[in-house]
Structure formats: structure tokens, C-alpha cells
Length: 617
Image (cartoon, rainbow, N blue to C red):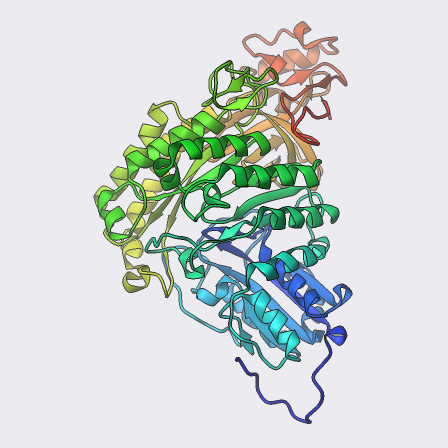
């Protein structure tokens, strides 16, 4: 039992119905859990649900993000005046973020000092903090000046703390029966998120914990996998959908293929129940993505894995990414860090996901058994590339995670990784993203013994290698995945820079998209891709009205220089794009004449049928 400083006066403990509670979300990034905007993690939602289950009225619970408090200092009053202040956050993997900035340790301390009531700290911050949110860090336990620190689940601590009259709690992990209640009861709190409802994606938990013990990973600290029932997840989606949420990611698990099974083998029927149930209760959802998929599951159970991947690709929305934890292609590093797959095994897993999920909405059926049924019980296969591919993102592609600074790393390690990535490209396969990071060393993992010394020693080589991968692999790979003419529906516009507007779709590892001109932020447009960089793309609004397009928009189209764009402008108006003499440019992939509607192949709307036509903005 955790006990606070003694309170004087012998007054009766507060009743839950009288409590005012403020939750501040400092954001989380874990190997199997993400919560930086536009994502919202499970932590604040489940904590809110636990508080309601303990008797606190919904109307007495206030939720803020750390960015809200930075932008409006007056909201600190909600922290100061709360009877109970709960901070949730923590980073156990480093990243770069566009939609929000995770709280730094000093900010977390300041919030604890600001609160006049009881303070509770929880989330992955319990594993430790560094001097900054970055890789190559030594992470140490630091209670950051809070009265209570949840060394178990923060939602369980919040429930027990309220139940005890704010006197204390047991450091325990919640069970699935509690999650069944708290997940749905806490759905209301998303309405207080500043991104609600249009630009918010809920991270969904199907399980947590991991059966394997990679040296650097914090996920095994949650224990062996504990799977929720499909009905529980579906009920949570239903509750969130009732609160206006239309974007979901099944990201809180170590391996989506293992859902509903024994922790290792796939269970395609359980995935049918999960994905089919989600589609039934949220028929108008706009995003259904996932995150982690273990390549060792595919190599150990190839046929069941293929069937499971087909189920996912049948129900998800385009642009989905299955993150593979290869971590290192160096056999020495693999052995010394208990990594699960060899480079060749991971390559085979990449092939399988490309074949079963790498098709694009609108592709012609393949007419062979296996794969996803087409309209006439025909089937589609990937990888879908080349000029005959539909102009949409593939349904499901693998991503590769590489971690540096692990025990045994040597100069040859970088060459092993580059050869692996080159082999993927040379086979004509697709990767949706390549995540290269340096290790963060946490107590409780094997890396705690080595720390971040190797990562720090190799920092110069790491930076040069990372640049080389971006130039030689990422750049041509992105051209293969997102060739010119690819249409990205519903790109949310986020910020202006250098005369352009930047935005992203909602989803797993969404591409950063730049369009010419400064457009209204907070809106969403369809975009046709015109060019690509290393990890981002450029495009024009789709469909572009050739009679109203700016010079910058016209010159963004492949094959049109400023001279040709000037000729196009002089020749306006046009009755059809076929009337435009654009030289070598193929305008039909990008533009229309006037306010003309065009279809977007396989656009997902209620259910999985074609959506409304797009019109020139």
C-alpha cells in the first residue's frame, strides 16, 4: 500500500461524487503503444473510465493535453484546483513528431508543483526518464516530485486511490474484466481532446505484454500477452464511435497476428470476429489501421499467417502498415540481444505481406485462388506496382524497425542492415516505412547493463548511415509505393512553411504531404501526388481545376515547366483536359476542366464500398 503524508484534523475521506479530477496527457511512445496527437492513447481514456467506475461523475473530470497547457496558461488553474491531479505520459522509444510535443521532465515537475490537491504520476514514465526525449539515453527512475507514483497501472491506481478516499493504493496491474468496464466508460473523455472529432485517432489495445524477451524492449515488462476478447474491443470502438470518433488503430499489441490465440500462433477466426465486429458497429469509420506484426509468427506459421493477413486487408483502410521488429540484420547482434528473426526470415515475411496485403483498391482481380475476393469471387494479389496499378495506397505493407546501439554492434552491423534493405528493394517488394533509431536503456531490460554507451560511441557513423539509407533506399522505395498520380483522400492540413501547406492523412505512419500555396488549416482535401522526397511527398489538390489552377500548382505536375504552365494559362478556358496541349504531361491523372466530379478507385466509406466522388476544390 502506498501512503501519502499524514493529513491533520481527522476529517472524513472525500466522497467520490464530490471530487474534482484533472487528467493531463503528456503523451506516450512505447514499442507497442502510441499517443502523440493526432493519436490519443489508452491511458487517459482508461483512467477516466476507472474514475467513473469508482464513483466520480463524468462532469467532474477534466482532461487536457500538455500542448493545451503550453498554449493557454490559464488552464493550469484546472491542475491547481483539482482534488486529484493525474499525470499520464512517458517515452520508451524516441521519435520526431508533428502533431504534438511530448512533455519534458521539467514540465512534468512543474505540473506536480502547481497542483494543490493529491498528485498521481503514471504511464510509461514509471520506467524512467532521461535528460531529454531522445535516443542514446540513459533512463533513470525519477518520481518527479509527485505524492503518488503508479508503479503498476495508472488506471488501477486511480481507481484504488479514489476508492480509499485518496489515502493510498496497491501497485497492481488491472485485469481484463476491469478493462472491459473502463474502456467504454472512459470514451467520453475524447470529446475534451482539442483534435476531436475530425483529427483524432484512437489507439486501441488488443493485448499487451510479449512472449519474447528482446534485450532493449520494455513491452515484456508488462508480462506475457494478455488478450482482450474481441467483443470487448468492439464495444470500446462502439462507445468511441458514439462520441464522434471515426479513426482507429489497433496498435496496442506486440503482434496483431497472435490475437485470440496462444500468444504465438495466429487465429484467423478471432481476427474475423474482431475486424468484422468493428466494421459492424462503426460502418462509417474513415481509418482502421494497425501497428505491430511479428515477422517470426509469419515464418513459424506461414499458412495461418497468410489467412490472417488476408482478413486484415479485407477489412482495413488503405495505407495500413505492419511494423516488423527486425531490429538488426547482423547475426552477431541478433544472438546477443535475443532477437527473433534472421534477415532472410524477415525478408520472407516481407514477401508474404506484400503478396497478401500489397494490393491497391481498384486493382483488377487476379482470378486465382487465395487472396482477397473480388466482385466475382476473384482475387487480388500484391505487390501492386507499375503503370497498371490502381492510383491508391496499398492496403497493407510491412515497415521495418532498426535499432542501433545494441550489445554486439560493430561497423559491419551497418553493412548488414543496408544489404538487407537493398535486397527488399531489388526483389521489387515494398516497404511502407523504415524506422531507424538509437536505443534507450531502461532498468529491467538487459540493455540496462550495457546502457547507451555503444549508441553514443557510434553516433557519427549512425548519422552517416541513416542519411545513406534515406537517399539510396527510402527515396526510390517511396516512388514505388506512391508513384505520381497516386490519390490520397482526406489529407488534413496542419501547418504552413515556405509558401506551401503541409498535412497528413490519419493513420499509421502517415506520409507528410506538401501542396503549393497557403491553404486553410484544419481542413481536409484530396491530393494527387506529383513528386516525392526521402520520407515525404508533394502533390496538388485532386482533382485540380485546369481553368483555375495557379502557376505553382501547374508546375508541380510532372512534365510541366513554367513556360508550358504559362501556355496552359493563356489558353483558358478549356472544356476538357483533352483540349489542353500540355506536351509530355499526362494531365488526366491530376486535373479536370471546371467543377467536374471524379471517382477515387475503391474509396472506403460506410462498410467497404466506393465512396462519394471527389470534386475540384
